[in-house]
Image 1 (tube, helix red, strand yellow):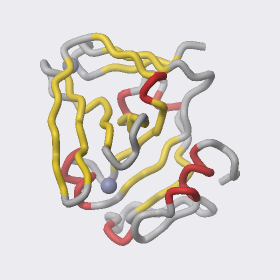
Image 2 (image 1 turned 180 degrees about the vertical axis):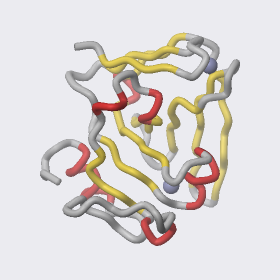
Image 3 (image 1 turned 30 degrees about the vertical axis):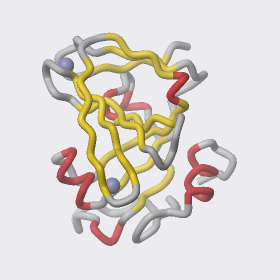
Length: 148
Ligand SMILES: [Zn+2]
Ligand SMILES: [Zn+2]
């Protein structure tokens, strides 16, 4: 099965060289709310080497204290597609809503829920953290090593 996605206008398309749709997590922090314009961002973490993109990507670099986040955006319609981060070399954080078949995605964790919009309830049984999740715990959930 080929996992594919793309931007709103269709000029940027990508494929993921993985066997099935990736598991995702929701981040409710204020930065993600501002960047997405939504209640939370829904993200999948994949090896950057497994991601191949065609189309007019442009870069936006955001430098904060100890890291640089490089956002990849469609140069035509400005949809954010994915980012890399100097704290996690080799990994790409894909905006999961850009995946084809996004209606089939599963969300296995919620982080920064202290900033959650009050109308959205965290589904019962789904792990959540008020601030950042420990990297290892989140990785275990996203790789399916630990069942949600
Ligand atoms: Zn586009
Ligand atoms: Zn966030």
